Image (cartoon, rainbow, N blue to C red; front, side):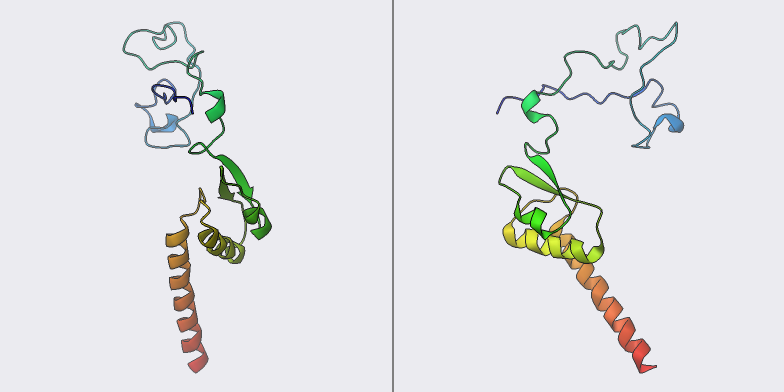
Length: 143
């Protein structure tokens, strides 16, 4: 694999550190907007100012749209999970809890990596919730 870019820049809009509405401490709001304005120092690319999006910062073509050098694949059911190859990583889609638990168990068996679900902690958490729910049901049935 070729080397990655020397330093990946995080391009943010002009006054991001001054105002929370521009994304100070708010991840989704902190997005790139091209600086406009007659006297804007960032637009003029002055020293000591944040960098502007320009040619040369793009990622290498082999690594574009990849997660940890693996191609992401959306998983909606167990069949999708079984189709995953060695150089792919699973992303669990917008599905219900029952299917999600099944997919997590199967991924643990097949040793498949999932991006948006930490399999071990997710399964432990769901088991605890199931125990609590079953205990509540038993108490309600006794009454």
